Length: 513
Image (tube, rainbow, N blue to C red; front, side):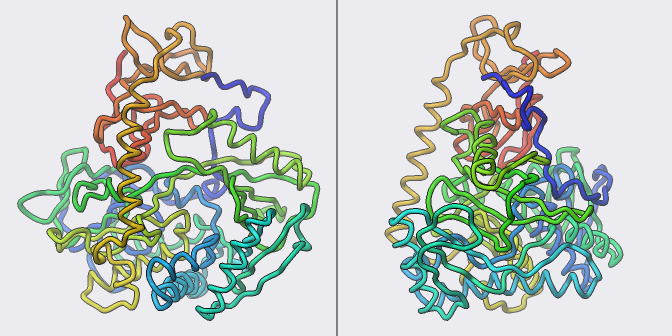
């Protein structure tokens, strides 16, 4: 419950390294507007979609609930790669070889788009070509990597298998699978440049403008300020769709959080981009900052949102310990976390949102790998909005045909889990009163015999909220790493003051003060 990290690198609130780079800011939308295309969401998919439409001379308006790039795009490991840990053997099994290869091609097209666009517009975004490597440290992981290697061979993916020790890793390995010709970059530098170009091309952007619903009688959107966006077509690129009842997306997405830190280390930093095959996950890549220093980014520690088995702060300390054990970690410069959605078959949903909403399009479910595929998703959406064919539309189609047996199993498992989570969080009881909270401590407290959520900030002020998610009524759990209230059912997150941090919820928590 308490945050006993006063002498720790993690006593401060999380702060992403990427978000240190300046991003243009825009006013909130207060008046009604009319536009041809409305894009909801200011992350990689939304910004690239708006840019591509503006480049075509179209009237496009992008709205973001908070500040641009403060969602998962600004809290990523920023790998531009088609190697998504171990995925291709599974895709062959779930779909077939042709679609598994198409998934690879889609990611490589996204990588090329980022590289070519950065070059064309002169955007310096620290883009460096690197190999992507998935490695194992156990015999079980080795067998999985060998199986994945056979999938690479079947699909004609450029890569190679290494058995035994990986030379540039400072710990024992049993195998590694390298995918060549991948890249890493600074996503905020790249997308900030696209934002400026979008405005130059005539696009309009509004921040602090949360969309709360779609209009029923015509194509359009209603914002929290009461303003209406009248449009012809809508793109929902809010990561988790705010209108998730349209197409029952709340029943088809699994939500997880993962963690990252950027640190000075005394040991050698690997040249490649690494991720392990086992659990808990560990992701590695280098980062060269603007002062010319080379730092190590360590990521991993994924778990279901709102349902960590340990206090959330421990995930950061676990990554720090990993860095100390293997890379002589000296100082943590930045730490942050992100939230990711996974679809039933691990392939994103990109395209027409539902059978009944021909003018509404969605992009969601990137399974923690939304940089390269996010760029491709924006290209797919743009082509569909402009009634043009795209080679990846069928693969990514949210309306893709009936569930396979494995997908049906995932569907059932997902929704049984939601029912259990509803009961699990509601059953938690408070053990303190608000007066007993220490500075920077939060959790369930008892007020007049009722359970509420409490947090005492560092100035001593206590913030009390009702811990019932405003999306579908699930109970929330305290996240001491981000000082937030998180929903294990569908992933909504709220600040300690009750403000919506992440959807699908669109309404704040009720204050109990």
